[in-house]
Image 1 (tube, rainbow over the protein chains, first blue to last red):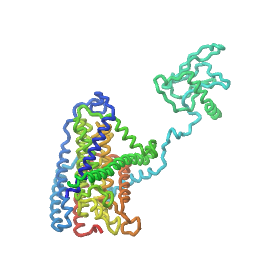
Image 2 (cartoon, one colour):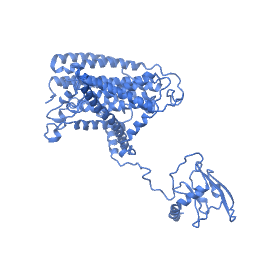
Image 3 (cartoon, helix red, strand yellow):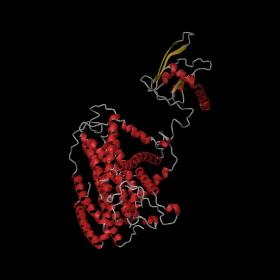
Image 4 (cartoon, rainbow over the protein chains, first blue to last red):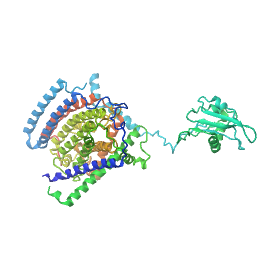
Length: 118
Length: 163
Length: 342
């Protein structure tokens, strides 16, 4: 069962090898002439006011939470979709009920304004 | 009704399709690019490029150090010193410098010259590699004149009827 | 795992991996060249034409230049994560090709859960971006990473739902089976784009957004946040991000035909046109070429979207359409509206 997957693992290792090799080549082939200005964080020419570890908008967290909800739902849908034709009407009705619940939640977050971006 | 048609239009992405059609048309248009070192645009005989000092056909330099060009130059790019020539006592320039960074290529020096000595050639491909090379001196200018006398003369002859 | 212990099979698989990975990297270089050429033509310019015939070697010259540039590590950066991020971007972008079939049977690993692996790998790409933004400890990089991550996860939902619709019709998580399910006597009208037409567009546009391409490239937005998450990267570390981005674009151009346009099947299958009705890898590559060029075409045509418009499109337009079409696809399947396979 799992025998078909080890080439994938090998490919992951090879891909990692290609990535590391490119960085190492660049590290060896490139020059290294340190200067304080060059190694300072980019800020359109002037010196950075403060660090980049700043607060940012809560909407990004909201989007991330919603993403987890919807992505989980898709993860549920995958096996359902695969065996759909074998189960028949039960699968159809049950998953439609599940989706309907999700749609209710979706309408709720829309009305709550969680999807607004300004 | 208008809102319905507007909605249908935006749903069918008609404007986006129109934009894509424009870029598709431009894809097949002939390109304007000129592959510069290999191809050049035709250059006018009046083109005002790099400077040169001309000579008479017998090899005598034309410039008589009248300093009209130095006086007329709006950018003060020309510097001239003069002295009697040792061999025959004629007044000649001992120094004739043009600062190419100051020069605005207006052509007044050429217009003012009574003996058609200083001219602007049609050469525009030149560069400096070191500091100070922007000031070109009398020997360099004379060498330019010697080297391109043929094309300078031809351009002047072609333009003579309109002057 | 018993097979992997045999060194010959291991070497053979390694050779097959290189046969996929090396042309992929060359394809990225050629794609960059083709992109610059097409955009040049659309701007009534010529594009690169100096290095090699038609400028074909331009991309290789650029790669060489990137490799011999200094890799700058900003003083405030977290050095370990700073170098992990490009690796995290490039490893999934390359490894995902393990399950992409190029022809019937021409696939490295004909895994049963191919679509799941695809989703896993494309999701991992987000980590590379967000780590790059955080580890560089620069404001522009962080802003770009946050924008980019939020945009990518938003559109991943739509992509996932489009995949679910395909899975409902095909009834398999295996890419070869998905393509074979689109075979039939009506040629291109048997493909999934017809019953899933809205999802086809949703998938394509989400894919453009997912790869951070114009008109959805707010993550890079040169005029606003300079280069976004990779503003602090230079040299070969930047080259890895570049490689990952273009490999993902090529992946999108392969997946859209495989999922919706019959993969290597001929559009004239069953029309009795002789050679033209035969399936073959050339059909897949032709479809790939058309999609890859269309991405360039979009870039040359459209201005950048505003960020709130992007989020609105993803959350308020595509997700309702996707959910609705899952219902429709389920009904299609249940009432056998769509014929599957031969």
